[in-house]
Image (tube, rainbow, N blue to C red; front, top):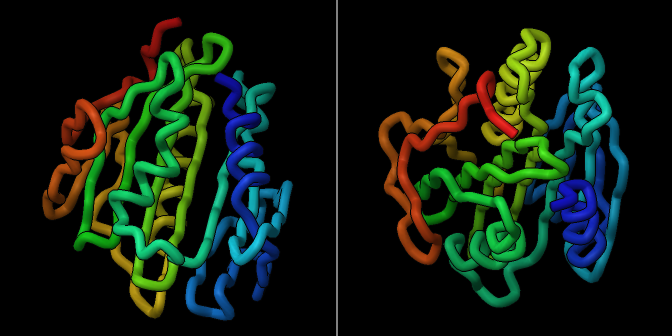
Amino acid sequence: MNIKRQLLITLLSLLTCIGQASASEYIFFNGAAKVNVPSKWQTQGITKKGNAEAVFFDIPNNGTSNNNKTANLLLIAEPNKSKLKVSQYAQWKSSTLLASEGTELLAASIENEQWITLFIKTQQNNTPYLIIERFAATEDHLIMLMAALPISINGNKNDVEWTKATIEQVNSIIKSINLNGSSLMKSRVTIKDGVAYLSSEPPGEQLIAPFPVVSQGAIIDVTKVKK
């Protein structure tokens, strides 16, 4: 599966112009939603379709063996016209990716019935990718974050350090998401002893339906992934 193509298809099929308050703060819905993104992550696309808003970023990975592979972040904000619950929104946005060959939902966390994190493993041209998706839903607004990170297949130290640092940055972005004056983060992607996993503190409720094969704490080894 072509990760960048998938992100661009999602971007072009869904979205709107965005207000940018500073180098790293992005504002949606006239201030109802705010997200902070590292200033070094270059904006590759700002798109508008109807009342949906989105911004697409390239995540720098120079100095790694995957520097010829794309690492991306996509943010989407749109009005909740159909009054979707967050589980319905996550299923809608993730269905194409999860149906792709070689894609596996490793773990999920649902928090306060308004926030969901999905932890997904997929593949592009023999390169494993770690996908982190975050969804939020209120009666009026919907937010989606999707980060796609190529994973080293040779255990290169620079690659592993990049993965650790980038995952922490994604965690920080997720923590910064503020929707209608509220933010929540009870789950995060963690790396320990070369293994990445979705952890919850305290443990979050597992999202069993409507997603298949969900297991809290599922792992992907970022140093020993095989082709």
